[in-house]
Amino acid sequence: MRDTLVLTVIGADRPGLVEALAERISAAGGNWEASHMARLGGQFAGIVQVTVDRAAVDAVVAALRGLDAVGLQVTARPSGAGAPAAPAGERVRLELTGDDRPGIVRDVSRVLAERGVNVEELASEVGSAPMSGEPLFRAHATLRVPAGVALGELRGELEALAGELMVDLAIDDDTP
Image 1: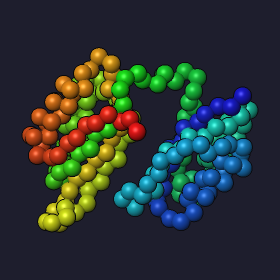
Image 2 (image 1 turned 180 degrees about the vertical axis):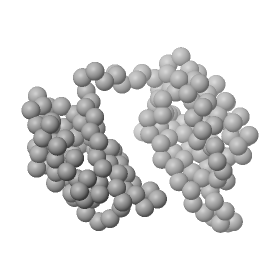
Image 3 (image 1 turned 90 degrees about the vertical axis):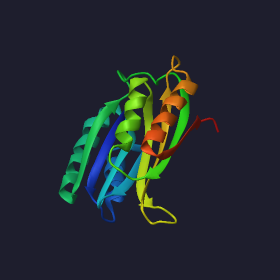
Image 4 (image 1 turned 90 degrees about the horizontal axis):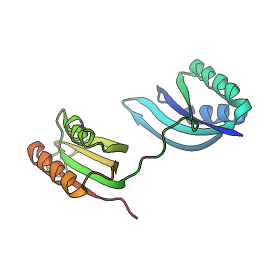
């Protein structure tokens, strides 16, 4: 029987970190299944889903602890049994672009949380606006909207907030 571990990884960015992590997982009998990783502020950070034979879980976790010696901190959490079921509801995409300022994510996430909307994925960045070169904030999110929440009402609330924040915001269904 196989168990699933979810790993969080962080360390000062340098070549070889992914290889060191992958080598430890593989040598201990784990299988790297899914991941999201990025360089942020000079740090390398990520989340990795690994499956491993139940009997080898402790060996994988011990092997990963050894990565502290090369400057990579790894935490492992079991997944699967006892984990909440996948949430029901409609999956939607949210795209937001506007002049950067503190509080944009806080304000948008507050509206979502008040409606019980789950943020399943979020990617954001600050870059330069094409014409002015001013800081431009962009966010892309995948949301799970519960069945009891009308998408039109949520869209209206978010559009009203976008007007207050002076950002462009679009919310669309996530079907391919």
